[in-house]
Amino acid sequence: WGLMVRTDTPTSFKGRPSNVKASPHWKRGMLQGFITVTTFTNWKSSFRFDSLHEMAFAGDNDDLEEQMKNGLRKYDEDGSLAEELEATVKGGNPHVEGVVYPKIAEVALFGGLGCGKQLLRLVVEHLERLKSSARQNYD
Image 1 (cartoon, rainbow, N blue to C red):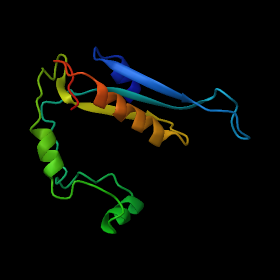
Image 2: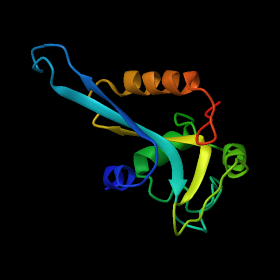
Image 3: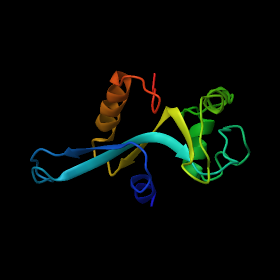
Image 4: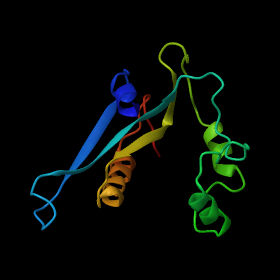
């Protein structure tokens, strides 16, 4: 669903596939993973970044909750990241083009079978090299 929504909206949308080399378990050229990047946009006027809200981690299973308690999972403990995200530049109508956050990239990894870390690294490097524009500025 997320891919359908993002590809159906008039925003800049880029993707990068990862194909495998031949191995005992994979045929050469098989799609191993796919990552997409677009400028973060939302369509709710009530949306806000708030990692301290009681529902922020409501969907976590027991394993994720345990990892957080044991310090094995990184998260915005003091709310400072959410505060910074909330203060970023944004604009637009949630009922028309959506509220666009030109300084925040939305990244989605689809089936990164053994390649997710590499795909994410490539996307971050790409975003860091992009020249700033009115539509995007991921400095």
